[in-house]
Length: 415
Image 1: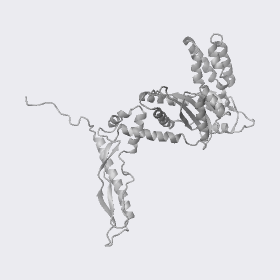
Image 2: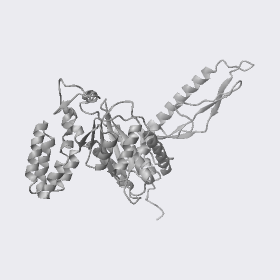
Image 3: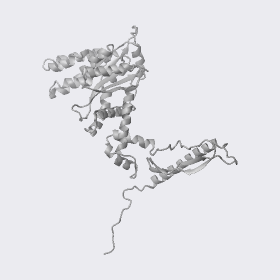
Image 4: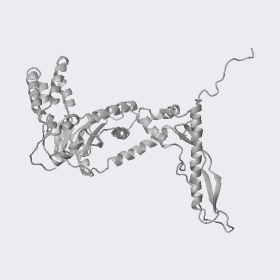
């Protein structure tokens, strides 16, 4: 009865991986060798310094206390040597590889905001990193994420002041994005503007807090963009929100307007019974997917004649923006896919909405806006250049296009 067949697992919370341990020990040796090489370089710079009796004036003086450096392989122990000057000015050794007070690698530091932005809440950050790195990971608490939020706030403020007069902004997409933030009485409405420059590169120009999508809110956004150096774009793309278009006519009256076909399709379908929507949707596609504007006009007239007698609201909804819906035909055909909808904003903020739902009501209004900005900048890095970007120079110089083809022999208008 004194015998016990229960096996005690003393290291059940650790992962025994010989390969990881080998890589970790190899990393420590490499760090030691590099730091030693840096030290020898420093000593060589002061080799001519000598004491009165001819001895070396700058010598080793032990090591600083060992410290743990958190890496993707887990904690790595580093020991930084010290030096002492026996004569003249004091000398201090500082390693470029392992600067003072650094306790995490940059890749691990970057993992903190990445995990948070990818739906890991600040309270779960420590546990998530312990799984990804090692169980004894330290210094990766929720407080670190809180400090990172302050950095994001500074990045947001500086981003809102960046100058825009270093290039030409040809097209802009604008939309109001409502978040899942519910700490206030009303949800946050972020007024978003994305622009494409003469090189075909897309960038966020503005992510501002607004009072719904009112004319005054959009006016403030556009005036701020103008003060930052935004020249009049050739075309602005957006949904049917009247606030933006009214403000655009005041601030940039020379900019042409293009209504988003995706938003217009949803608005028209909402005026139809469910049974009639599939055919109506296909009829709408036949308009904006036509190869020429003449074919699009015919398909447009056919839709009005087909649905106006029985569904007049649907016909009126489509007809009232006829000119603005056809504006994209006056630009290069290579750009049609991008400029006839506000998809650059919708597709980007689709993933952002998922993250803001994860945060629920725990963020402040400013915190939610800063998160949107940071997520948007992360998405911006993956954007491709505009298809047919080499035609943008022609659009800037004012060359006219008819049904997507350059019109030869016409006078160029002012850029």
